[in-house]
Length: 238
Image (cartoon, rainbow, N blue to C red; front, side, top):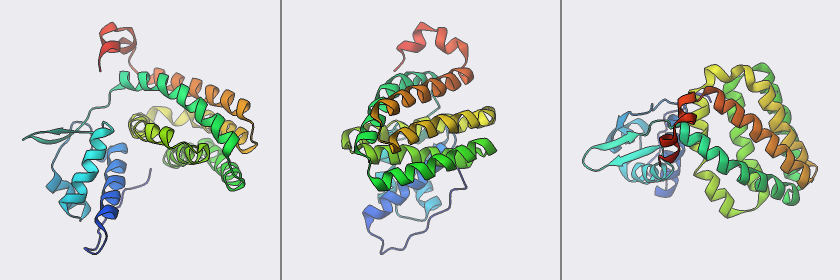
């Protein structure tokens, strides 16, 4: 992802809009590790960094805490949560089932506008993968996640995935040095899902989604220490 701009909003901006800006800016900083794991923060510090009041920052922090990116410690402040690699593998098990359902629904419900956007995005993501441009690749991946959820027309799925995607993106960004050589295949796998959805073929979309998740899980396991997977206690950790 590109550099996260410092946002300065006028006092006349509605509070809800400020809260959304605060959330998006802080999420980007957390995902791209500009706010690194285990960093100690305060609402006052974040308010200063974003150039907005503490109330919208507080609302943004609550959302980020629900997504597991920030931990709120009474009388201590805020702590950026560490990246839990074992938790990431467990999330992938859940995500595989959800992504298959999302891909199938998107293929059934996608509009003509969605079809055109999927085709354009598939080409752009493949090109970014082939160039090994990891920032552009991750941006395209985020756009893909948002687009396929929009096409699937399922508010419950959208809410569930909104709680999963930020932690996923932070994991991938933390390992980007080791993953750049794999982006050509990743771009192609994402494109296969998008082409199937664009053509309105739910069974092909579901199959392409499973193949994409095979790739994603394989890459994740290649960078997670083996002792995580062999430790029974790790599997039982919350």
